[in-house]
Length: 465
Image (cartoon, rainbow, N blue to C red; front, side):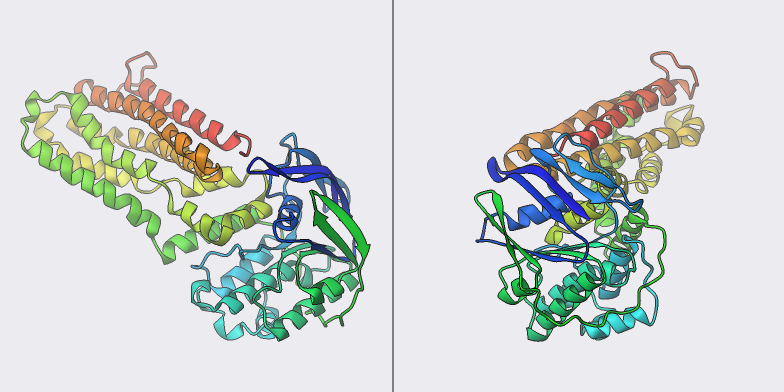
């Protein structure tokens, strides 16, 4: 089901794992043990495809029945097969509801949450009465129950053998929760699923079939006791096409609709810039001001909305929610994040608002023509927004020492902004033209778009730091 081949993992310049080989077979529970800081979490997250490898590869059994690379030290990655995952810090955004979180964990694994199964499962884990509540409103123990349930459910509700990775799942659970966890793990093993669990809990260790002790960067294997009575699992749900990207988009839209941090956080600075520009313009005779200055003032508010850090980054950072999504989506996670996190709605209306507020129709003979074509530079600002989101994500993934310098990369986006300023200035003085020579508005817009796309590509395709 899962094969680890001679992997090495470095974290913060320190070698955590070295020359580790390991196979996770169908129908077994494997416990990762060891002292704090020994590398249990590193091992589990490397198996999930979250962490970059210095050497070796992690391979998974694909749905076609063949072993394929999940991630290797050369940077090759593939879409992960359906997986259940519980991280040490839950990996759940506090704005999600209990029901939404269970639904997301099933949809990314190719299962559709149907009634009455969903209600039965939530009731079994003592969460049914909180199904409509946000995760932030749960107690620590209830939140942990939800995280563990969402790690187990993709296998428990599937007839197909599935890999389950659990990091300290019993932490924060009461006695009944631990008994339920052990019963489900034994039942999953009997049904042919594979469970890897990092733990200090002796009861969880005793229920495993094999024990892998992590220490000094290597693994030492011993036989487990396989204790525990298997629980009766719910009936499997019918399979549906795995939709990791669609699930992420729906999740991001729900989070923003429920708490519009991104829209407010971007619009407020843009409106402040617009008011300052209006105050400045009110004191100046526009007939003596160059069109370049006016164009810059018109486009500046929309540019500000584009380069502000997306609220999505803060949501992904909450309880390592982003790491969970990386394990589900795989190599295209940052690409998807950058497009979802980009400001794609605000640039167009804010550009037109700035044009209406700052420019008097009598000041420019081509005012009506510019109004018709103002959407073009505003559209390219969306390209800048995607590039800015990718840079913010790149910085968020870097270590702190590197992040401070990398954040200066946002200054590169001033270049496409100046190109758009030049395009709008030309439209204001000479009207819109469709020539492709240097100095034509369309050419300047194309150059700005190409620069933005290049920055985006560099940011999303850079190797993981």
